[in-house]
Length: 405
Image (cartoon, rainbow, N blue to C red; front, side, top):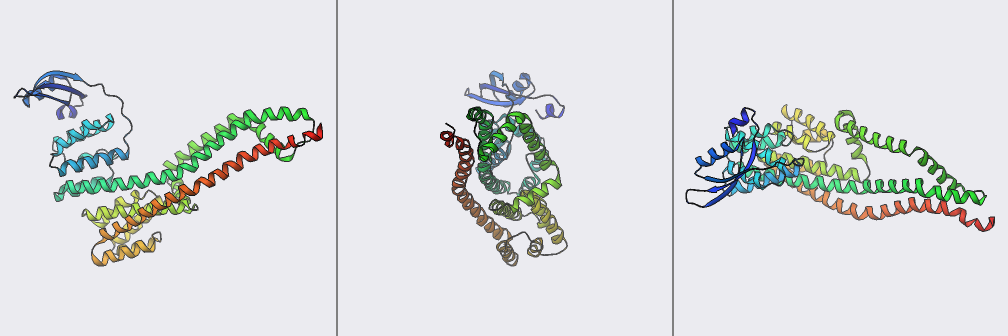
């Protein structure tokens, strides 16, 4: 199997059924280039195949960070139970519902089977395993505590993904409401208002200013709806591309996000929680501080903290204490600085930073819960004012109908 992969021969997944030396029926899956190779592999294992079938590989879904977190948790659990590494890869790969994850794990298993270290195999796929992940795995392999490091890594990823999910849910709620409101207003402007306009024209009376304003906006929508949707859609697409690819735009938006009322505080606390959690995890794994800071900045999810981490790393590498370097960055709350100082004095930086991360993760939870209850009445008022304003402006001429008659 490894030889075929190295020579560029395409592998397939075969489902097989057979009998072992004791006559017991066994089933399984094997990755190979053909049925003959599967038969040879099974015979070497003492299995006499009775049925071999190539499985149709569906195009798998995109591999998400949640998939990697789940894989890490499963690997940590099985290795703690004493399951060998290669067998654990087989079990997790076969049990995953996403074919893309199964193929990724099979490829990594093939590399490990040929003698490649686990962290080196992970480093071949930087899209799914970042430097933090690989560094922790490398530290676990070097110290002989891989299962403990995988468990710590799984807990870190689960907490990080939980924070990301809460931030997204808090931000997506008002954004989705604004989008729905825009669609509703567009439908009213294009289909409903013109019908009212025909009726009001037959009145022959002067229309109130609010009604004229709404009718004017309706005419713009009816005539230029394709341009409005094109500009908004195209502008949003190019803005997102610029945000994703341009460092200047990303820095500007990250700074702006931190200054948004209410939501800025939430984003700041989540960034601090992820920053402290990442550094605590790296330091507890025995990764040197300067090397650990390489992965911390990007894990914060904000370029402001990434740039500040670069400066902290430079200062720490020249002999400055971590607390002093963090203080000079001027972006960390005083509580984090005080806990870091205590950790440096007591030699337990990882423990104190972990406590700080716990505190700010709880703060994020409370803020998200508070925002959810606060946003509902605000959104109701917003939608009521918008739709109600349009309705009232269109019914104002009806109040003058008696004067015309």
